[in-house]
Amino acid sequence: MKIIIKPKKITRKNFKKFGDIISTKKIKSININDGYAKRFNDLCRINTSSKKGSTIVSIFSAKKRKFPMNIKMMEKHSLGSQAFIPMEETTFLVFVAPKGKKPNIKKLKSFIIPEQIGINYRPGIWHFPLISTKNMNFLVIDRKGKGNNLTIHNFKNEKISLKYKK
Image (cartoon, rainbow, N blue to C red; front, top):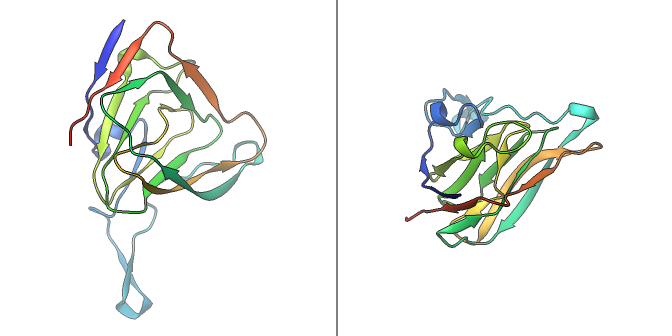
């Protein structure tokens, strides 16, 4: 079976079942630091406490992907959320499927994440590893702790391709 997926621009509504958009757009700020800064609270739901896990902050140094790209596998983290925030102005992509024993190929989605936005996957959401459009670093917030927090599904009969043009 051959499947071609083209990414759509992300919105809070179309990404809601997969996780959160991390953005200050349409979020009320609080003036802090004597008016020299604004604070935007509660931008996503970090969920890492399952089985006494803890929240960690890391940097992933991502390599630029070439398109079209083959999607040969997906992964999920059942015990914790996982947030990706670009450390430079860039567009990146996500490739996701809803929670389940394995990725439902009829429900595969891909989203374009514009500049100044990050994302946070809910626990158990199937996703392809980081899809960067340039060589750069991402701030990653996820779970550290005991328990199996990584499940990988390798596609065997499906030929899945992600098409994207800037």
